[in-house]
Length: 241
Image (cartoon, rainbow, N blue to C red; front, side, top):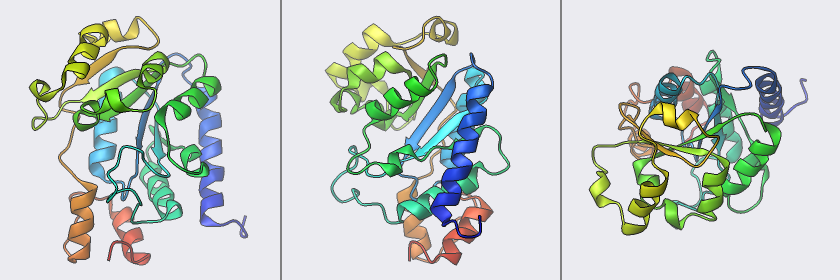
């Protein structure tokens, strides 16, 4: 154990957590929150916690992306290494049985496509309903995602509504998608294993990783946005300077 690198130790913990997930609560479903997590902050974890509470989930996988295909060219390369980002997600999972860090996307080369991750998860947990958590900003581009129709065949989309992203701003393709797939309530969401889009309210927190990085670069405090242990990790490893 002493010879394991930080990434290997984190992967070992992740494999144990996923094994435990397979053996517990087979019918409740799994929440999935992916992202660059550069860094992971309270907006991520509090939103995921709120969604889990609303849908009655007892597990949420936090999946750090290797390279997100949905980022702009300026944002394409993460500021922190994959090893550091995974370590911060592991820290966020500590002491909270709801969360597990899943590093499968970090093991891939190139872009991290959601559809590939969902196919793997569906094979791994065939009896579970998958709930993929996204923000309104992601929904606005969802019909341009790689194989988005296949994504909906594998999971439900759970959209965190945001006041600065009103549904009136959605394009025609997205409005048409909602016409065919939107679930009016949780009961309707639970009736099928995939293919529904459900809007949550009060599950989004206005915290930005970009703004956090800017504050850290300016040596400003982020105590209201970051867990103390993650803030300490960032300071110890001299990240975002």
